[in-house]
Length: 492
Image 1 (cartoon, one colour):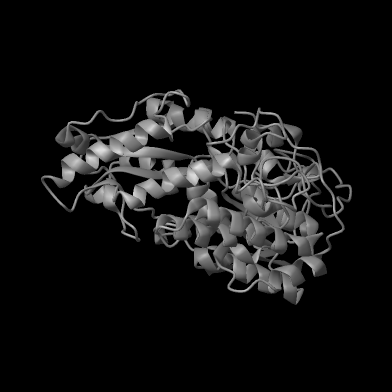
Image 2: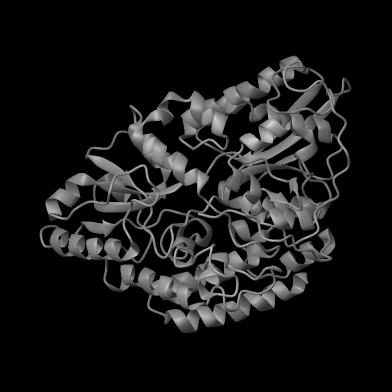
């Protein structure tokens, strides 16, 4: 899959303009508040925060503690308090971070770290409120979906000058591109979102249906047509013996169910029907791109012929009762669904001693439409551009992302690391299932590249839900395209 950047795009969007635009959107949800999260994998639709030259310090190995790829100035000896806002993980992972902070402050006793833990879904709103107040935490957990907004609003500090080229090029290229705008990295990728099809071999055998291919080749999975045919056969044969069984587990993304997370879930069904290598004025390219080159129009993109067909395929899952119409938790793990579209972190959990399911399971690439599509939208900390201690804030993020700390986190949380060298250091990524995850990470792409992606995201979620529940795909997408165009107009 091509991940080459689009041409850089610029507009006169400043932070006040961007915040005003965000504040005017009714009912902003989790990721939708914008300055709220990050970006994508190609060029930029915005003028980023100016990148002042960063003084070079001793570089890796030259500081009091391992700061990973950090090469900025040595940290101050003056008393400093760094505020870090992130999501709350499970207790053992939260304790892991507490231990990391203790090691950091032992090396730099003049630096105090004050952590603020918030529910994951509240991060965007908290970030928006903090930035609007002019007194934001030094480090905030965002997402690379919204890199253009961070750059345009001068919300995030440009990070490129703080890190060695070796470190930056170690980040998977599509992920690095997704976290960058105007040639600068604004989000430091935390992990790599990799979506796969997990399946229950026992239920496939029970239904006498051939399971999806198990392969390390990203092109070796089902086509979307083969997937739908298999789901139909599964539904017919499983429900003939047990009405509680389903072909496909309900989505657990976001709040669960259809329309819960367009970025990491439903966008697959549209964008797989496109082709990034097609001519730029073609329906195939527009279906994949999702937005015009200037980032301000989606008409002809989210309602292209390919997008409409993608949503017709998606609607089939619900109209034929191949998957539940609402949120149902843990169907795959409970053994009541044959298939689940899931993060590869679930496969890592299933491989662990404490997470093994009670059934024989496998993993396959997501199905192909015209192409295979994989979205790399994932968590990424940003350093607030208004931080009074930028060097120390960047150094803290760099420390949390050094090899040992990222490997430790990945092993506890199950996420796929964001850097290639970490994969080679982890024995658990040498297996066949994990090699598929690595191949998919290399081939992933970012979200449609627009400074108003939070508006885009929030408009697409209800549209997708309405289509799942029976609305006409073409009419719904045409209406939604016009709605998004109107929302994006305020950023021009």
